[in-house]
Length: 365
Image 1 (spheres, rainbow, N blue to C red):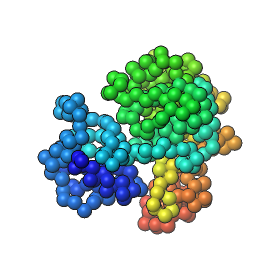
Image 2 (cartoon, helix red, strand yellow):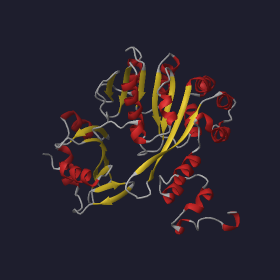
Image 3 (cartoon, helix red, strand yellow):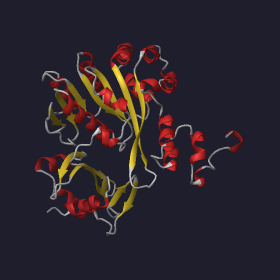
Image 4 (spheres, one colour):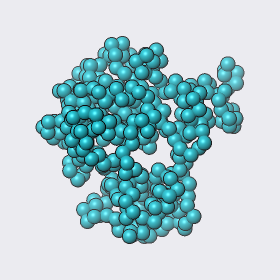
């Protein structure tokens, strides 16, 4: 058994989401959002490198040895599945192992708003799930794919970096392809997928102009495209896509977004009141005539007002969602306060008063 599996086994036993290994510090576990060291000696450069080399293939060793970061999936000896990022820093090797449950989560188990299920009923267009790293985007998308897999008869092609949740085909056929193993780039994967009679294409990350352009083409030509962006609001997501493409394509991009962008879900993970878990809290945009017009007229800054007044369509801004979760006692109010945009609306819920002096009391009324 590779020696690194001992740390992974310990992490799983503690219920962590990530195991961090870095030179000069002991192994650390991400527990409900907080990073905590385990009782172990500080790792040396040669020790940690010997650990990770035990689990790499020859091609992975060559890739990492050339000075590039390495992303891959790893299954430990006891069956635990992990998404791994391996990198080098000033003191030596570093690695992060993200635990991927063997059981694909369901939308019901995640307790997402009902509108998320409705997004799975679209037959074409683009639905984006966004948020910063570690906010559960992949988990939400996996639950959406699982819902499609169980309820519709489709050809679903998933392009990932790396493959995380494994989806056995049920009512649908699910084809999972991995960047670096089965395809050279997301853009090439989308181009290939469009020749493979797809109904749904999942793009693991819209990370460059070429990928965004290919995903837009797929969405415009009768496919449902699901994807992610590392943006922290619906408005920033739309602006990022417009800014990512060349200036001469700006009007074309706005036209696409106004017509083919169906929804944007932006999420954060907030601690539960008992501190033993985290819950996804979401900002939701559902494209309608009013939002389409704001996109076309370069008035995306007015979109939050549309989200606030569009609750009957399933829309909500992040602060609305956080307040609702606090009132339902689903999240820790102090952690919700940290994620809130207009923090003054949340002051009355805060239990840790040391968080409040940052405000100018003269203007807090």
